[in-house]
Amino acid sequence: MTLADLFVAIFFSVLLFISGCSSVSSEVQAGRNALQTGRANDAVGYLTQAAAADPNYKIPYRVQVSVLAYLGRAYLETGKARGSPNVGKSG
Image (cartoon, rainbow, N blue to C red; front, side, top):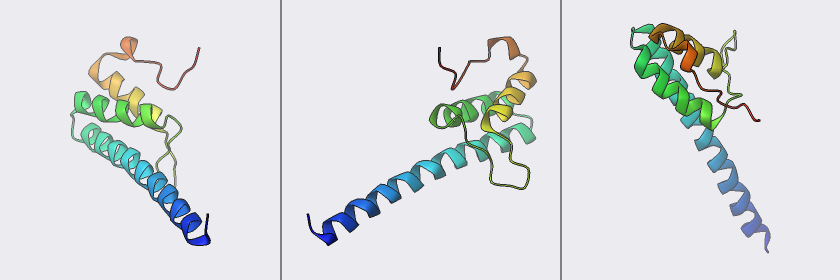
């Protein structure tokens, strides 16, 4: 394997990682926007997808709130708090 091949492999690995992070970020942002505009059912959909992809994701702002906190709030606002899934919990 040449140095150029190694560089290409690392480049695509980093690109894949970045694209995965931006997907979670956009799902969380869409979920937050849905919560703020009174569309809690839509927020549950967005935030469930984001939490399934990365349950440890936190928004990159001064106060870092986790995606699971927003998902819990969305379930509370829909009145379905008892049916909320255990996303990211093993066992």
